[in-house]
Length: 132
Ligand SMILES: [Cu+2]
Image 1 (cartoon, rainbow, N blue to C red):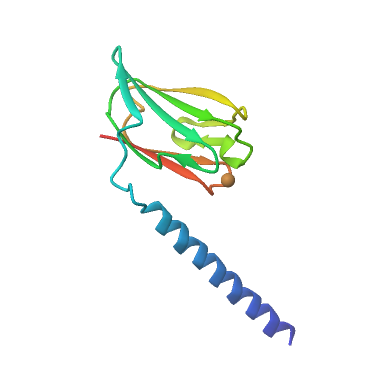
Image 2: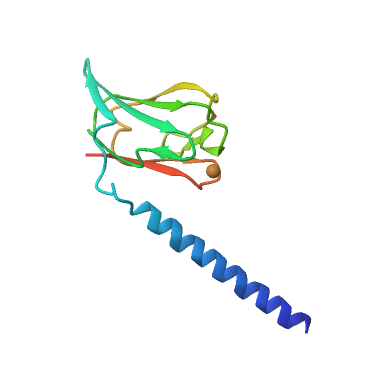
């Protein structure tokens, strides 16, 4: 009896976990999977990338220039959800952002390579910068 309950709980957990994995995988391949360039601007040899954080991150996928000193500007505006708790693993960056304001994060030319991911500390929301 107890064993049967244990097994059914295990199967349910697998199903729910698998579904979550499937859904989040599908969200990643969103409409703008090719990448957004409108958030990127270059001024005085520096690249600026603007991302807004509120109920997730926007744009979700950004195309930027590789090997260029970059300032990532993360804008919060009445952001009280967990997207204010930002983690960028490649930069060893982790910070709880102010509910409203702009956080400037420096990315060196050497760091501006490949795909850089930013995510909330729970890993629920994320965005990607593809340096090309
Ligand atoms: Cu989260």
